Length: 143
Ligand code: GLU
Image (cartoon, rainbow, N blue to C red; front, side, top):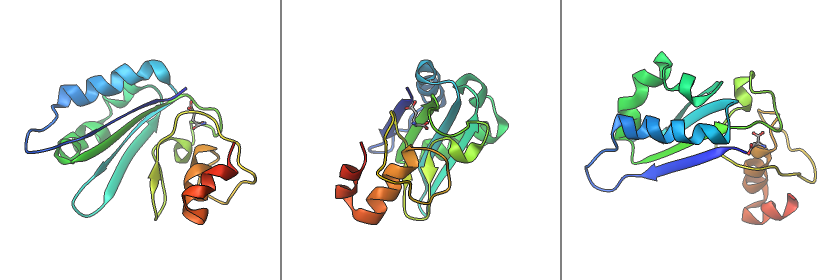
């Protein structure tokens, strides 16, 4: 099952680059199909994700280049994926999953009453879509 971590930063002391990458690398044991990070800037929520294990992800230029921005963020979520629904080679299936109203990372498997229309083939996105359509009680429509 997937690896999930995150941090909220209080005050001005920043998380260090090696702490960010170590956290991701330590999550890799929970899933090697993909890795991803979401963070918040002043204006919006951003994410980066890629198929493959975290030890490759942390070396990607696209990830290395945005590390300073991630470390500036007060909120960061990390995910390493062990896929159950949705082919990891299609990056839209990897976590974080985001649409115009929200973002989710998830560990586990859910079965919705019916599949709502989304951007991925994952069960995880269904959690977000159900909450967005029905509010928090929407979770009761998933087993
Ligand atoms: N079922 C989700 C997916 O395939 C999460 C997988 C997991 O927790 O390993 O993306």
